Image (cartoon, rainbow, N blue to C red):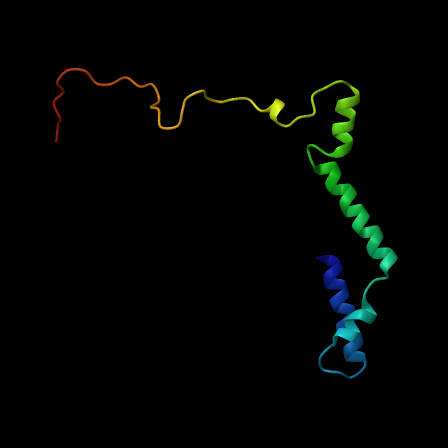
Amino acid sequence: MGVLKDWLTRALTATLEDGQETFTKAVLERQALPTRKLLRMAREIREGEEILTPNSRSQMELRSLLGMSTGYAENQTSHSSRKVGKRNPVRDLVGSHEQST
């Protein structure tokens, strides 16, 4: 968001300095960051996301080299073997019970 805000601020400043009331696509294009800087930012974003991703490629490669499991399904445990619609085990009331109102 900061990059976008800075870009729009530069475009607005350039527009006002030129005595215009609105900025155009041409002004936005002139105020855009250089392509090489945008590429560097995109690469840094991708690398940062890979670090934060639990099963990133580098982590999976490391686990593979160490002979550890790399599959997502292997790490999942079954919480219940019960089938859908089957009741949880509960004690049912037995005998006659008076309802108090």
